[in-house]
Amino acid sequence: MKGLHIQGIGVSEGIRIAQAFVYRAAHGNAGGASAEWKPIAADPAVVEAELAKLKEAKARCAGELERLTEKAKETVGEEQAGILAGQRKLLDDPAFYPKMEARVREKLEPAPQAVSEIVSQVASWFEGMTNDYMKERAADIRDIGNRLLACLSPGERAGLEGITGEVILVADDLTPSDTVQLDPAKVVGFITRTGGATSHTAILARSLGIAAIVGAGDAVDGIDDGDTLVVDGAAGLCIARPGEAEAEQYRLRMGQDLERRKSLEAYAARPAVTADGTRVELAANIGTAAEAGAAAAQGADGVGLYRTEFLFMNSPSMPGEEEQYRAYLEAAQLMEGRPVIIRTMDIGGDKELPYLQLPKEVNPFLGYRAIRIGLSRKELLLTQLRAVLRASAFSKVKVMFPMISGLQEWRQAKEILAEAQAELRQEGVPFDENMEVGIMVEIPSTAVMAGQFAREVDFFSIGTNDLVQYTLAVDRMNEHVAYLYDYFHPAVLQLIRTVIEASHSAGKWTGMCGGMAGDPLAAPLLLGLGLDEWSMEAGRLSPLKEVMAGLDRQECRELAERVLLLDTPQAVRQALEEFRESKSV
Image (cartoon, rainbow, N blue to C red):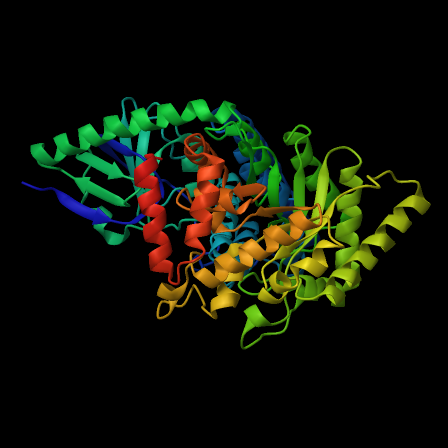
C-alpha cells in the first residue's frame, strides 16, 4: 500500500521521516485584503496620539527583530541572521515607515491601515518584478508588516512551543521570522502550501539543514496532525501515511543521506587539492555581504562573484556610497583576508529597479543593462566604485565590470574608475592603488577578442549563464527552446578555451562564476582546460572538493583534448560521464 504523494518544490535536500505537526500561525494581513477602517478625527491631539501608537509599535517591532536576529546568529549563523537584520533596517528606510506616518498625518488613516497600505504598495512593487528572487522579497515585506500590525494590537501570539519531539512542520507558509525559531533537533523538515525556491525561508531551511518543500498547493490539506510523513527535499516529494514497504525504503535512503552529508562535512575545512597534488582555487558566489560568512564556513578560497545588484534590489531607494561601502567591507571582513571580487551593478534583463525608472524594452537581455547603464548614468557607477575602492584599503578586494562587449566599454569604465581614484586621493581617503580590475566574459565578442582584452585587464571571469544564452541564441527561461541551452555545446567550449589560453599567454588568470563552475561533471574538463578559479554557491564547495580529490591534472588535459574534438553537446556529456565512471568520481 502506498501513501498520499504530494509534489512541491524541493528547496533543501535531505530525506526525513517524522510525524506531522500542522501549524496555523496567527499572522496579520498586512498588504492583503482591505479591512474596514474609519478615519481618525482631524484633531491634532488625536493625530499625535495615533502617531505615538505607531511609534511605540515600531519600537516594539524593532526590539523583537533584534532579539530574533541574536537568536538566528546562534541557530543559523551570522550570515543568515542578516535576513532579519535586513527587516530591522527596513523599518528606518525613508520609503517605508516614514510613509506610514505621512498617511496618518495627511490622510487621517488609523495606524493599522497606514501600515497595511504601505506594506501593500512596497510588496506589490516587488511582486511586479520579473526576477523570481525579487518577487519573493515581497514575503519579507509582508512578514515585517504583519509583525508591525501585531505590535499595534499586542496579545497572545501563535508560536511553535507546542513541538516536543521530532516533527515535520506542515503550514500554509512560513515567514523568515518563523523559520529562524525552528529547532533542527525537533523540526526535521517542513512542507508549505505556498513559497518559492529563492525565498528567504528556503535559504534559511538550507542553513538549518532542514529538509524542505514549498509550493505544494492545496494537497497539504490532505495531511492531518500526527500523520507519518516522508519528506524528500531533493525530489520535492512528500508522502503522507506511507505503507510499511515504502517507509522502509525511505528509512534506508535517509540513513545513506545522513552518512553522505557527514562525509562531506570533512571537506569544508580542507583546501581543494587534486589526486596529483595540484591546488585548485574554489570560491563562492554571494548576493549579500552576510553570505560571505557562509562561504567562509564552507572553506571557500574567496568570493569569486559578489552580485552587488541585490544590495540595490533589496532596497526601496538607492543605496548611497556609505551604505555600499559598509556592505563591501563587511563581506571582505567575513572572508578574513581571502579575495573578494565585487561585480559592479548588473541591473537590467530580468533584474528590475523601479526607482531608476528604466525604460520598458521588447528584448531587455539585448538592451539597456549592466555596464551600459553604468556608463550612461555615470554618477551611479562612480559612487559604487568609490565605495569599492574604500573597502579595498582594508582587505583583498577586486572589482570587475559585467556585460563588456568591446574594448571601448572597458576603457570607458576604467576612466570612471580612474576618476574615482583621483577623487579619493584628493580627499585623502585610503584605497589599494594596486587593486585588480577585471571583466566578465559573457558576450561572444569579448571571448573572441580575449587576446586584445588580456593585454589590458588583470583577469577574466567567465559567466557561462549569459555566455551560453548569447552564443546559442537561446532564452533559457523559454520552455520551448530551453532544451537547446547547454554549456557543453562545442561552440561554448571553444570560447572558454580561447579565453583561458589568451589570459595565460598574457600572464593573467581566468575564473568562472556561471552555473557550469559548480557542476561536478564539468570539473575534469575545466581542470584540463586550465581554468584557474571556480566560483559557485557555497553549498556546492564540499561536493566539488570531493570530486577534485579524485582527479589527475594530466589525465584531465588529455580528456579536454578529446572532448574538444566532439561535435555535439550529447557527445560531450557522454564522454564526461564515461570518464566519471572510469574514475569513480
